Length: 438
Ligand SMILES: *Cc1c(COP(=O)(O)O)cnc(C)c1O
Image (cartoon, rainbow, N blue to C red; front, side, top):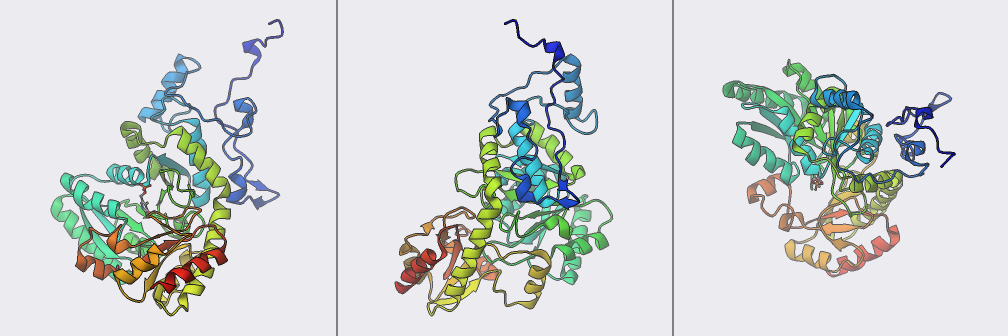
């Protein structure tokens, strides 16, 4: 065609959009505003308002020198990572946009996405430990995280010391000193402090600030504090503001939010992300482009969804708290322990929508309640648009030994509920009729 543009006239294509304005007239834009456009320039994709899904295994280089430069970034020969896309095990446009947007929520310098929350956790830990090292972790952890430390990393000479969520500064000092001794005996170091707060299913909170103080007072080498923020993040708890170095998510839960995908992420300073990125480049485990695209859609409504489910949970818990068939609640909006309340006040901006309800009676009464729910579905997982209910002692924590269950407060009358975004009064009506069968 005669009106074809001479390629030489075209500006060099920019792979990444120019850094977007993050503030207007001195006002920093809210994360929920930035979720609509941050990290994506329609002009780079034929004007498509939404990012296309980039289904490709590899990326064409502009020229040979660019290919060399990108590989220098990937292999660590040059600082700062790859300037361009190389191969889809390393990264892709959908994943990069997603990582840029996830980093915003936690105020992190960088983020990495994975094919599941557990992939994120396993690659994070593997990248940080060597033979003889010790991981200090809060308890209980998500069962698969606890299993990875105790059963898999132990095969490579990595041991652990755990402490109960809610431990005081003094107790934390003791725990870290004990871990230091253990590491000394094994010829390693305390390589990582790994937290999960609130703990599942008890909702016990970890004092992140106290952990940081204890780490700084007792360890003289860089030992990152990572925290699984799946239950409250990204809306109701920003752990990097309270002394954590790395925040971990199962994006499967609130962030994905529709119970239709599995994915995970970590975020933090580049110095903590780089070694994990290098191991992810080697192992794979990056989220796929289609799932990344779904998560971009999810992030546009994450604040709306989480706010609504949080409001619903508050109303439902108010109803349940005074019900004669309910013995008690494990809900962060109704804490009775002053030291837990103190942690909540310092760390959390909302009580979430996942909580425990203790039914009067035992397993039989709890099962009758569960079997008569009509709106709430009987399923494990949490953070979706729909309300879910489960029985941890008989389901997610079935394999936990009885003594440990007792120590963790996982009783036969504990039902865990994740409240969704349905109408709150409909949910209350459903819980009311199900309780009549107890
Ligand atoms: C679900 C979950 C995980 C694991 O995430 P997957 O996406 O299922 O691999 C880790 N931690 C917590 C707290 C979870 O709820």
